[in-house]
Amino acid sequence: MSDDRGVNGDASRQGAGLLEVFDRALPQVYGYLMSRCGNRAVAEDLSSETFLAAARQSPDGPVSIGWLIGVARHKLVYHWRRQAREERLLRAVGAMDQDREEPWEAHLDVLRARQVLGELAPQHRAVLTLRYLDGLSVPEAASVLGRTTDATEALLVRALRELRRFYGEEGDRA
Image 1 (cartoon, helix red, strand yellow):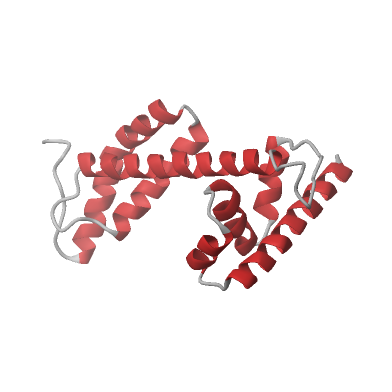
Image 2: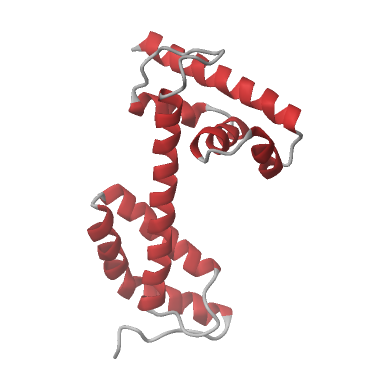
């Protein structure tokens, strides 16, 4: 039998079929991801995300290994984009103009800065990412966030204050 045979039908048959396809496809999907990212943990996470997406949104026709690898490719591209955004944000925060009203002279440690960003509230991460990583103006970021420009400016000030506070606390603990 072909490795690309698919499954469809009623829900119980489809669930059993997805498990069958999972068993056949896992080594190929994982191998595809591992060969491209070179990181076991990332390849495992993205494989998991691929199969979760397949379980949620299987196509109308049969589920094939080729389709799953296509989903895995999209998951990998999204991972790379997210990682690049985080790195740009860290560089932007580290390269803040010294001439600005709010000089921050501390040298950022990339790993520590990533950890600190993870501790921030989601709205703070979002406004910092939109403003410094994606390079949006405050009014543009406000539009994306569905807030007024004044509210976004205030959010940005609070986000920067929290970033500095968490970063300083991390440095105190080290």
